[in-house]
Length: 262
Image (tube, rainbow, N blue to C red; front, side, top):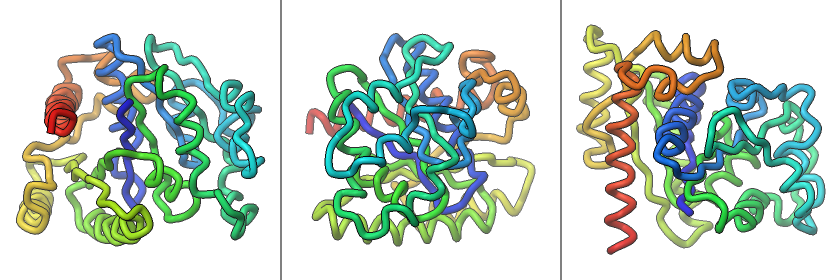
């Protein structure tokens, strides 16, 4: 089971779009995929037809008893979606209170890792949609994942979010006693913008092979797909955005194959 966290300490950089697009492409191949919504805003949960304000069992439920792993709650929280081979562990807006509720309690950073251990034989892939702020939910995602994807919109403020994110990764590496592999994905790129071109060039000069040598373009079809609650690769496989995520997935799966044989 491969576990990817999709994370950046800035909102609006296409984290949710990246999760749903990659999950959809894998699901179309017949590969069972679990997606986790760790963002209290619940965009991914809403996208897939659930209400984070009203949902009864969610990821929030899993944090209620840190001294044990509530197996029943885990399986109650798992939701089917209308898309074959895609399952969801949804967000609740109550997750926004977790940092204050949990304080310094032991084990609070490993809840998601423990949860995923129950699914290791059920799902081939896991994607975690992370909140844009550092806290217990992001720490859980980084502790649980094998790989980190960092979507970065090709604009100045996203570069600052990336710097904060990599500082967080450095802290996590210290506590993990190992290096968390990460891959930077340029997103929402406007090829007609000189500013976007300059940021893309800066990304590649500064981070080299850690940056995908392609990009996800601005594509209005993403907006239409989200309005309909459909992943763009399922709704319009030939859209520019769909084809870009397909190219990204090929790179990711090739890299995974190399590591597994390495």
